[in-house]
Length: 184
Image (cartoon, rainbow, N blue to C red):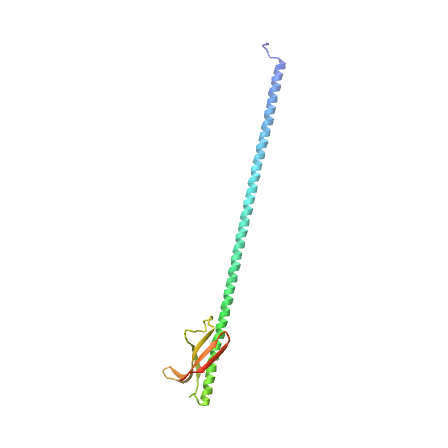
């Protein structure tokens, strides 16, 4: 074996070291590139996840807004229906009050006719009718209401009055009214 190292051996060692360094450099470059690609992939996935979450949040907000609008629309429709029903009920009550006034006018006319015929004493000043048996023109479920009517022929000084008693019936369903003089 030789004690000295030849140029050729040094050259071989140098080439080997350079080859090792080149391979190591290439390996390091590949590793850095792969790490960068993995980081880029993670960033892209995070960005896509954030975009999906933002879209889901926007969709949920839109759904909540649409649901709130639907609830508001339903409430407005219910309020309108209630107002329409109240208006219809008020109109029915006004019609019923007018029908009671018609019954009073009819009783007064009948009593005046009886005074003229000599069967009752007069003069008949007015007629007043009051619902009996707990009936009321406000009870819109009632199909009919009975009335006690008084054909007034005398007003007393104490605020009371006297007259001829009539019974009346208003049939709300048929839209008819009837009356008769009670035995006094």
